[in-house]
Amino acid sequence: MKLDSSVIAVVTGGASGLGEATTRALAEKGVKVSIFDFNEEKGEAVATDVGGIFCKVDVTSEATVKAGFEKSRAAFGQERVLINCAGTGDAFKTAGRDKRTGEIKHYPLDKYERIIQINLLGTFRCIAMSAAGMVSLDPVDEYGERGAIVNTASVAAQDGQIGQAAYSASKAGVVGMTLPIARDLMSEGIRVNTILPGIFGTPLLDTLPDNVRAALAASVPFPKRLGEPDEYAHLAMTMIENGYFNGESVRLDGAIRMAPR
Image (cartoon, rainbow, N blue to C red):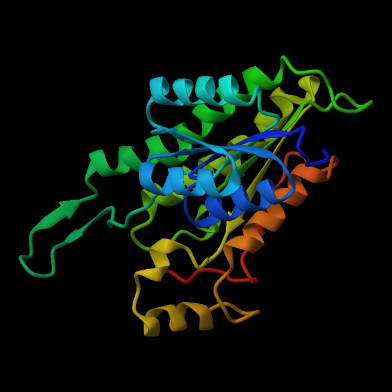
């Protein structure tokens, strides 16, 4: 798919980190971009910078996701591109003993459910609603392509660390549904791919002390640094522009394999 001013895209989590980098990369090619995010201040600022629009969306809420697509389509028209970057994480052991009190605790199930709701169900909710709209579009080529979707998983889908039971499950779910969704949508000309980022320099990691960031960078086989959000955006753009890229889940991680902790 050629990315230019005729293309409309929606980026979830598009106000920061990997999503912001992708939003800006798309806009540089002239794509009209709608940012779905919960951070209104940052979302409006990025939208203004790129000539896009901001839609305040909580991906766990069907109503706000639906309203986001309605606002985007009213402003720009039906999107051909969806990039899912909205997500979160936390860390709790499945069960263990509190080091201070000795109390035995298990993973708080409400927190487990929240991670699944955002990372897995939120991703699928956006895919389903976006794809339903893409089906109505005319194809852009002789092969019948109508749209392209890129999801964000994590290397934790395969190398989950201590405390990442919920996060790893949610991201493994994104990987696991990539091929079935690509097959669901093949007759409609909609491609679906997923990126599994390693350790990237996102706003979350920016809050860590310099020595911790340096240790994380040193753990990457090569190159020994954190991934750059622009590198994620580059791969996302490739997945959209390369019409033979479909049904794939690709690690982008400098060859890292995560240790237990």
